[in-house]
Length: 498
Image (tube, rainbow, N blue to C red; front, side, top):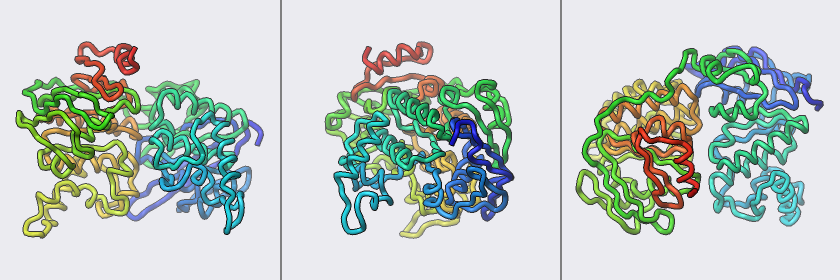
């Protein structure tokens, strides 16, 4: 394809599911050699349209053209073979196989036949792709041995291996370090120069304005408009996405900080958490900043008993506790929203109601019998409180957008009425409107006297919502900042050890 030629046109596409109309006549024009941002809140219809383009869903009505011809793929393999691939936000790799096997999954025949695969050729081809992308990952490495960030890079390598004309990237930087993000930008620029089209889905405006040429905005399943990135502002895009002005992204309520609730002294876990000490108070939002891999998540998992501590003392309300597993943590009125909602937060094949009631079933079970009436009442009320969008409470949670799935998880833990709520990357992959709702919710919980520990890789977020910020580096607390002293440069210096 030559640069700046129309490569994909979506015209008046609708998609209906039982009880909900996900798309209401949306349009999208994609040109070769451009990076096109697709913007909208979670539930706006972005993922639904991408699944139609990829052949995972069939539209209810409307039409599409690809390279000037009618386009209506029946399966994802049809779309791949025609030159359209996607890097998914959630990792979709087979952990028990190698990097090379994941890159070429479904195309093993290129390196042999159904009886014999030439592993050496397969790994050499993988090495060439990884080298072209500047990725220092061995093709023979098992995916299970990779970090989340490295898995994300393998996903990118797999998409590039198809030599696709259109690559859809859904939150591709969600698990990447700054250095890896910079490398991804270089990859995208090279693909653009080759005449490839990139559909870029992200909620991070710094990325949108850095790498994208044009943007299409959806809201509530409808096409709202299109803007050239060089001719718009962040404020205009936010208004188009959410239908309202957003002057204050981080509403911070004045809350009186109370007595110590969680006291951690000399906490250690293997060689990852190293002599960590801090105190969190009633009504306090305590933020944990730091680089990817600094040990923030490991501190939270140790406190919640996912990985039991090796040493140190933890006190809750002045009494020493020894939490060895999450069940014990829940019994101590602790709760944790985990970093990876797909693998450790959801049961994908179960309903919204089942996923929301999981953590507090013991409270509504007596003599081995579940009080289904109370379960329905409580989960319905929580879903309304969290403003979750779904066809019904009995829908599979996998049908919900990422933002609505996250709201279900947060609602689940609120049903347990915790005193201490740990939130690890609570707004990852969530749009600006849903983020504002979650920030307000966190503030409301602090006003109610909850103690909240928040881990976030987004510095503006952690500074915007926290009363105090602890900086974690190499498994240790490297610095502490009070709200009136927040300074992004100083926080980053502590994170890097400068």
